[in-house]
Length: 317
Image (spheres, rainbow, N blue to C red):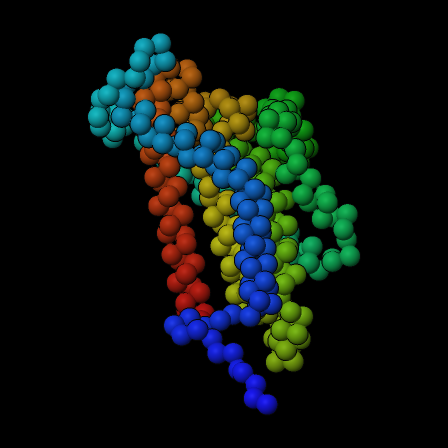
C-alpha cells in the first residue's frame, strides 16, 4: 500500500496552521502594546506641543513683529534684533546674568559635591538626606522672602551675627557690589539639595571593590577621591552641570521678590529685563527677540557642554 505525501505548492512555502496562529497572536500582541504605549506617551507629547513647542514657535514669530497687545502684530523683519544689538541695557543684563550664572554654578557644584561625599560617608543617616533636600521643596518665592528678612541690613539675623563677631553690617540686597553674591547664595541654598541627591546617587553606584583595590595599592583618601571618585562621577557631574547652568540662566522669581532688579539695575538679569519689556512696557515683540537671544545662548552652551562630555568619554574609552 502506497502513501501519498503532501507536497507544498510551488512558489510559496506553506506555513503550518499552529505557526500561523502563534505568529498572528504575537503580531496582535505587539500592535496592542504599541497602542498602549502611544496612550501613555500621548499626554507628554500633547503637553510638549502645547506648553513648549507652540510657545517657542509663537515667540519666534513675535520676535519679528512690533506687537503691543492692543494692536495687531506688525511684521518688522530683523528690526528687533538690530535694536537688540545696540541696546546697552540688554548687554548690561547679559553681563549681570553671566556673573550670576558663573558664581551660582561654581558654588552649587562645590557645595553639592562636598555635601554628597559627607552623606556618602554617613550612609545610615536617612534623616540627614531628608534635611538636605528640604530647601528644594520650598517655593522660590517663600525662600526669597525668608532670606530677604535674614539679609536685611538693619534687622536681619545675618547682620546681627556679623556684628556679634565684630564685623560691620552689610547691605546685602541694597549694595550693588553685594547684591549678586547675595542672590547667588539664596539660589545655592535653594537648589543645592537637589543636585546633592543626584551626586549622592552617583556615588552609590561606584563599586566598593574599586576603593578596596585603591587602598591595597597604598592610595590615600585624597588620591582615591581624585583618581577614582571624580572620574567615575564625571557623567553625573556633567548632567548636574547642564541642569545647574540652565536653571541659573532662568532665574527670575528669587530676583523679582528680593530686589526687583535693583539697586540701580545691578541685579537686572535677563529674565527680569524680558519680563519688564513684556509686562511693564507691553513691548512683546522686543521681549520675544530677547527671549530668542536667551534661547540661543542656552542652546550654544548646552551644545558645548555635551561636546565636552563626549570628548571626555572618548578619552576615557
